Amino acid sequence: MDVLTRLDRDTAALRLRLQTQTRQMSTGYKAEVLGDYGTAQPRLFNLKADMARRDAYAQSIGQALARSQATQTALSRLSEIARKFADDVAMKLDANDVETIPLYASQARQALVEVGQLLNAQANGEYLFAGSDTNTPPVPDASNLDSSAWVTQIMAAVQGLGTGNAAAVNAATLAVVQDDSAGVSPFSAYFQTGGAGLAEPQRSVQTADGVTLGFGITVARNGAAVSQGETAGGWVRDLIRGLASIAGLTPVQAADRDTFRDFVTNVRNGLTSASSALADESGALGLTEARLEATKTQHETMKTSLTAQVSDIEEVDLAETLTRLQATRSVLETSYTAIGKLGTLTLAQFLG
Image (cartoon, rainbow, N blue to C red; front, side, top):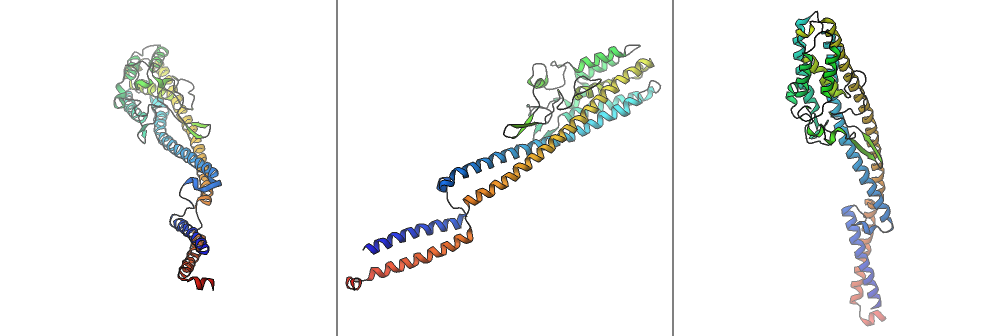
């Protein structure tokens, strides 16, 4: 009986081993739950946590890259508008050629509408120039930006251009685009007086533990660029101011050639400032994109390495496991045969 007992116990162990090996062949994993990995459990836990963290960073970076690339597209078109009106239209505004002034004024009004629509550009359902208020268009009535309070007040100031008052008119248009009060600013309440958007820091993305990169630009202020020269403090304001100033011109304002020339020079300088700042924004965003791409690649490379380490702990060698499974099955069959034979022995045969 002792022999049968031992043989039965060994057979039970073989059956358990066979079940384990069969499951391993089926799943490809050494164990079913993390707790079954014994001394490897802490390392496996840390590896998986690191993988999850890097995967989260890579996903966040990917989303930031999608937004920044869409922002680059909008910036590119805004830059084209600023350059056109600074280097082409404003250069052609001439008191000796008053017939073209209404044409350029009309073009400026059309450009204002396009600027408003570009400032409402979206990526993945988020408004790119809205800061943290991503679900609200930063320019609520973009299609009518050319008739907004900012624009109509600037046009009214421009139409007061007479003899020797270019500096005064210029100062008046500057004051208009620096007015963030409700009912005057064309921006959403988030970017009006008292709104959090006016003081909000640049939107950023966390790319690693303790590391963030800024990439956001809002309608209220520049991102990385610092506007210089004839500026209201930001390229959005400078661009709208310049376009609205041209939109407000009629042949009447060209009556005093010197005043007209001085005013147009100020307008051109403001548009040039907007153009330069837009170029700086695009360049800075390009550098940020390069850093984001590099960091994302690093996370993905490390995740691949970590995945391999996890696989070494968790996964079985299927060829080796199959060999062991077949050996276990063979031994188990032999064990069953032995038990069967022992069960048929008589006492005389067993003692003999």
